[in-house]
Length: 245
Length: 245
DNA sequence: AAAACAAACGTTAATATGACGTTTAATAAA
DNA sequence: TTTATTAAACGTCATATTAACGTTTGTTTT
Image (tube, rainbow over all chains, first blue to last red; front, side, top):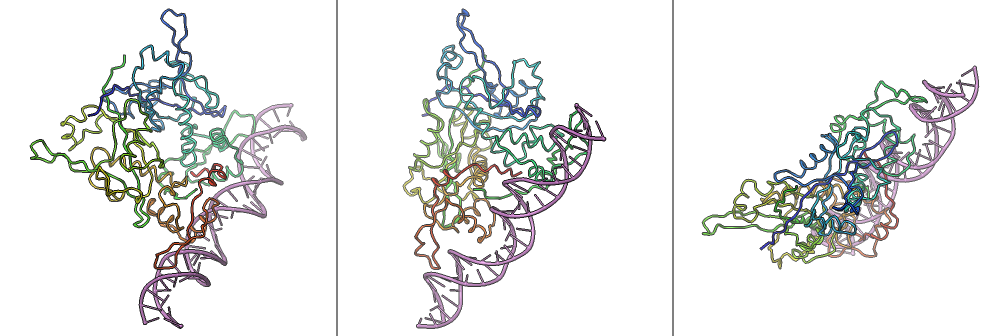
């Protein structure tokens, strides 16, 4: 007979926001700050991902979408369920013991981790009820629980997916320059790319549509704007079975 | 305040076994057969993946490894946690209702799904206490619960991974011919590959080591044997940041 | 009008791929 | 013992892609 264990089931959302101006991939985090009852002691003072208990009759995907909506006000973003974290001691390490003793998490908590892709500018950070803040993925603050690990695994998955699918455009504005795409790849993958080769490669793609528009308000020669056509991409697309080992 | 819900937490294992002789990628399944108490009715008669409740103090990875060991007797195989399935109604569709009414699964069951890679021949199927059987992934039997979906998603993930990492060798014997590798790719990806081009490509890899050995017992010109050196692969390996969109 | 500079275009060699034809070495049949 | 058969293994060539550079163009700023 199976023993019934009380579990918590939650989703956690790694919200990746790319900032075209600073060329930085950021993660949206909320403050976890907790004082002891007599206010003599700060129990925890760090940042965490947003996540929440999955409601009784809710699918995992819906729970993640709900959490994201509450945090950012946004829906219909690129979403990926990338890993479940459910080791029995995952919330009971080191300093988090204090939090646990506060009886919030007395049982194993399994969290289904998702990541979302958007543009940093699309989140109205000033009016955010959770006081959420952006942090560059390369310069994260002190993180609670195992959330640093979760972010790290999300980032690894994102990097792999960037190479195989045109999800970079989920991170860029609808109209972008070739150099902005290059900057995004460079920043996210941590590599240098030759501009001339990259430009040629991108312009030759049928689903990169040149617009009759240029940047304006820039202090040098303004660059031509392009857009990504998901439509064209999907229609022309036939899986490229290149064995790249 | 969070409502506490009783949950079942389980792991499910998609065991992929490749058969070099039949050139078939197979999945290891066990029979689910259940009669009503008075034996007047067959409640369920189909196949399912092996899975089990995660023990109280067990990590998810260990639970999966334990289930695999009990099923196949094997350890140290290629393993990947690829997706969590936890929708509230996932075990309560159609005919599975009978099973549910039998009160085995009265609550939401979240399952963390893994897949494993091995050679079909490495499992001693005759002495398997669960009466496990191999089924070609392209010709699966009637499956219980949402296990067809789970297998399908595992297979899709495997195909993607095959293109980017040399995991094909997890499915092949230690010593193999070039044509056996080609057959494996063709069978798994469902494509045709030109033998002369494929051979050239593979032989040029430093981590494909030619052996001073040939096949024997074959009725035509015996082929040269090779092995894959994970060691060489990892040492020479520097991530190939080819943006393939 | 000139300087500054990013945007945009161009060149060439090396490498990889795709689509084929040919030779070789083993067993099986004559 | 020779010959046929067949998969293994090798070779060729045209095209495509990549890497590594140099050059020109078109704005804005001085």
